[in-house]
Length: 278
Image (cartoon, rainbow, N blue to C red; front, top):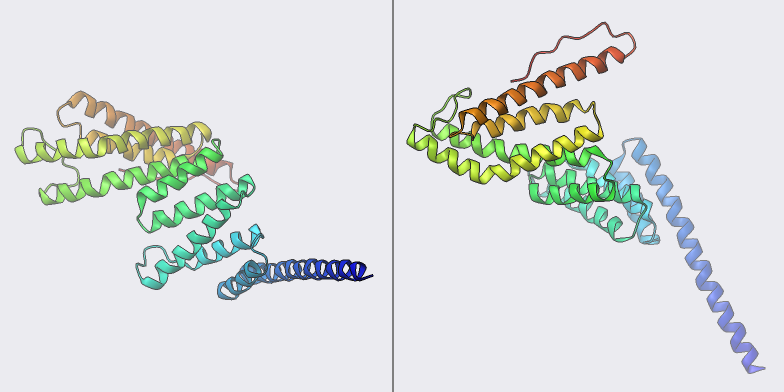
């Protein structure tokens, strides 16, 4: 008799626990739905509160963590280097990383990796950004966007220091580094050694992006810029410089023709006029 009572008590306790867990999961989904509604109405702080409650009620609910990360990211202001703003980005990154650790579906994993990469990019943490863009590319090799993003990062990392060094030399924007000038030759050699691997990686990444998306005009525009980066540090090889500039001009033409073709496909378009980028 006592044994039967103990078994009934144990069964009741298990049912109570299961009922409690089930109730928490239902409440978590309710908070998730309320958060989605607030998010769609651009009430991001309210959405964050609902998503946080959802995660607390059911830590296994991947969608809640994904939405929470996205809501934090939405509150982040690119370029505003303040403690509160950076904290918002860090909270978004933390939630995206939790998603990656939970063995999510492929699309969720790709979006989480891209989300982290985008935040690091805007925080100017270029190496971290490239790490997560590469992760996204490994998960979905047919997605051209991570390759494009790596190319943009590489160009940014090359362009800024090159322009700073040119400014120190008092050079004009359209003036080439001259190997006959001792100071300019030294700077050119240093930039070529430092930027060379990044330039090649950027060219390769952008070419991959265009291969995956043949009408990727943004990637074409950056490929033009990347070849100009390489041309400027070809100080001792005039033929190589001219070839790089010729290739850059080719990608300017490709960019313009692709943009024009896209515009002509739009309903009601009468044609466009584009200025050629330098």
